[in-house]
Image 1 (tube, helix red, strand yellow):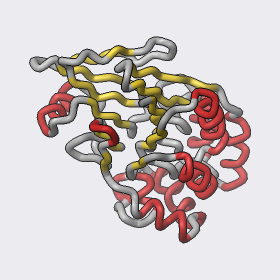
Image 2: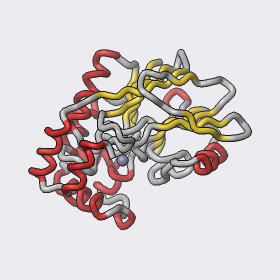
Image 3: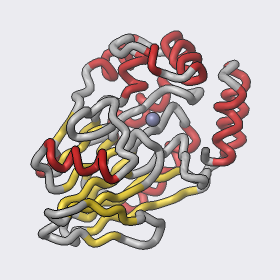
Length: 243
Ligand code: ZN
């Protein structure tokens, strides 16, 4: 099976269209979404409507749950809060229902797919070796796919210790049978690793490889829509820098 793995679209339709176009050409057997369909960006409803029919499976992100009032936004920063309040006003009843009904984790073909982490699927950020180790200890997955940080990354557990491995474009990572992996696929609609291009991952289950794909999209078009919607200027600016 060949999987397209996407995460953190954040209502960025221009980035999503470029990623979906790329997947049309590559033809994965299934597309999985790791959550945060909405929040920050100007097209929450269109992004959900566009993605839904393309997905074999999806999980809820913290912004998705906040947008449907299922998660308190007290812990969100003020800019994210402002975007969530705006997003709540835009959602249609069917989109709200879809986001509300998203599961917190799925296990397509045996690998674990969550937004944040295995032990805290919606909210935990895996940014360091210590947190990665705690998650390898908490659940028996061999491969866990995550998003949430918007930074592509790989954590490898060899049974003794956890190490970090880079996940770089055009450099497929080969999964070793005796090791366990946490793979962060980056963000389609709001990358934060200093590269403004949309990110998603390709998981070739037969070859046991994971690849990161980066695609340029018309950032200014998304920015203009955000300005017109009155979304915070800082959220508009960061898209151009991938921060
Ligand atoms: Zn996110």
